[in-house]
Length: 79
Image (cartoon, rainbow, N blue to C red; front, side, top):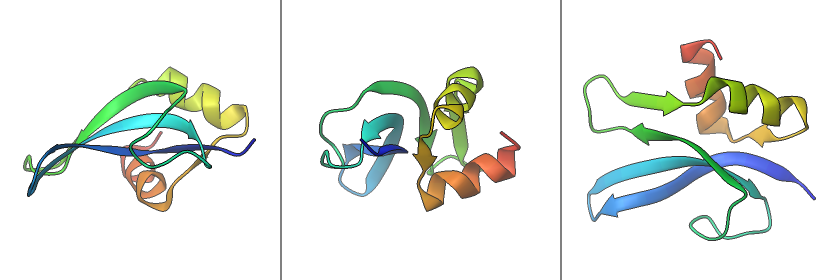
């Protein structure tokens, strides 16, 4: 089972809001997930990322791979 840390889109049309979730890579983007570990709001200035850092580190240590977008956000935030 390939586990990914990725964004689940929420919010209204043209007003995106995302939840950071851990999910099996075979599940749909907005479908079933294993655990919700944070939120991401790109509309705030500057964009706002709130995650449970201990859970992110736990999942990465257990083989979960963040998507390219989240890897960039984690790198900026030094997680």
